[in-house]
Length: 339
Image (tube, rainbow, N blue to C red; front, side, top):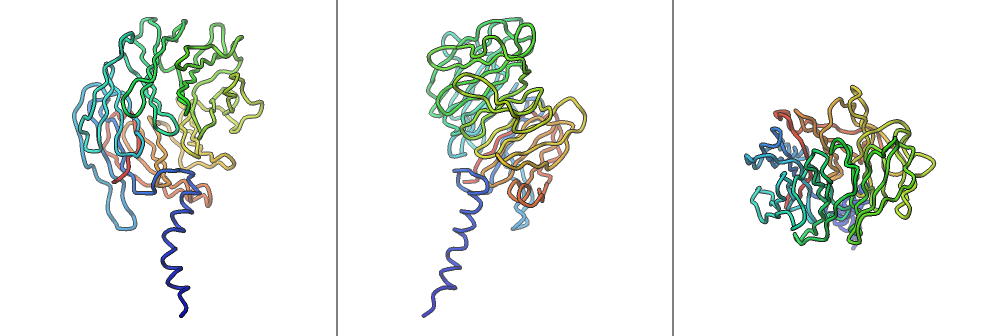
């Protein structure tokens, strides 16, 4: 008896899954994602499910909660929980927005949280505290089980704006932070449980405007392109991986996105390590996340959109979709799984 057609039918879903995993480079399960976002200037958290074109199911909001002063959020391992930053605390929440744990600042840290970054494996999260007025910035790193890994106080001078301190968390409980150097250029700091070390003495002549992890590699957006950062000594690659000027970087397992803010409508550039493309030109970008279903989602103050990175980079068919348009001063975005 010829079993070939039956075997082929049984293997087809597995082959499709393998191909999608290979294209996205993610180790997460390939499922339809949900999205968590901060809206209304920090006064609301939403859980959104994008449209499922295969079934004709439209985008929907499954949960909303009024809050006060939410500033950022990140997904935790498995995609079923996220960590939400408020100025005075961090909260672990599930996909129904139930608070599972509240993390008060550890002794020795003055909590004025402004930004979060997760490690590539999502097993650690770093929070930057900046109370303004020239006070020293602090970094607090937690493991995904809510235990404290370490915290550190950054040496002066403190940047005039917390937005000038840009950082990324590696997979080895190490934070790399870039900030303007006195007299021009930038300095890179490496922060871990052993303390803080300024890696660039003298400072780099390049102006670094953001940092992001692409898998295990660290990249910097500079005034002369996106460059690889040597994680041993803080030097930058001579040749940029992306030419042009970018001020914001967003990393993922196998993709990197770059964008230039405050310059009118600018292309959102997506790079997979060898090929780049652009799903859209944007004049406003608040946040971006690479979901494990092969889509990237990008957030402006008023709208949330999605794009298919698999067909986008392979066929220049980004399949851009509108997810939500009823937003007002949206601030931050992350993905969640649907199970």
